[in-house]
Structure formats: C-alpha cells, structure tokens
Image (cartoon, rainbow, N blue to C red; front, side, top):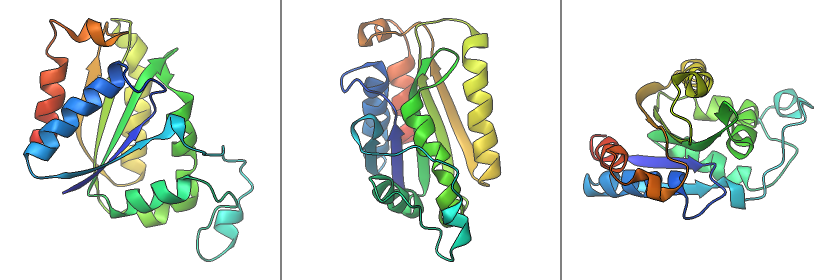
Length: 178
C-alpha cells in the first residue's frame, strides 16, 4: 500500500513529527511505502477562490507551486494521513491551506482511499479536539474515503510529553495495521 502523509507540523523534531515517525515505522514494517509531505516547509499558496480550476477542463490551479507534487502523491496514494498539531481548537493553518486546495483536485483524488488523522496537543480536553475530528470526518465523507483511524495525543506539547503514554505505540500499530 502506498501511503501519503500530509504533515502540518512546523517542527521537524516536534511531537507531531515523532508520532508520524512511529506511524511510518509501523507502516514500513508491514511492507507499505511512505511519501511524506512536510507542508510547513513547502511553497503552497492559499486558495483565492478564483474558480479557474473549475472553469477549465483539466482542474488546473492557477498556482503552480508545491501543491502540484502533493496532488500527484495524493492521486497515487491508497491511504492519506493527515497529521497536525492542534492550534486553538483546530488543525494548523499549514494543513488547512493544503486541504483548501483540494477543491482543484478533488476529482483526481476521490478514488476510495483510506484516511487517517494524527494530532498532538497540549490540552487534555475532548472539547479542544472535537472541531478537528469533525472537520476531518467531513472531509473524508465528502471525498468518499474510508476513515481507518484517529489518534489524538492529549497533553503532549513536546516530544518529552509522549514519555509514559501509549501514543507512540498506538501510532506504530496504526501504521502496521493498515
């Protein structure tokens, strides 16, 4: 299985990145291939709702940036993993920018993929993560993808906060279980 990971984390050694690494370890152990997009370090313009992508026949966005590479990876993927730190009750802006750009490519990526969400946050409240989980479920439903798992790492602002929790082991098992 080919897995595309959309990482919104702006911290290459942060909590979200650590969870992605453990997920990837599990997926690779199961024989899957990983294509990871660290979108916080890519050149991706925000959608301007110009609708040019829907006015022409080939769903091409007016912005020719790193989203072109991401779109190709998503179209080829059997599973898409959304990974994000939680900032003020939601996924971070880097990941949301990519998701907004799905508008131009939704026909090429709507092919029954599996999907998964991995989050990390300093808070311990279900109310903090609920909006992100609901947004993720809505995206997956709209794209006709299959939600195969959600891992929310509560109380984990830094990678050290993962110590003494099952979150890294759970991330590994999510990857291995695909």
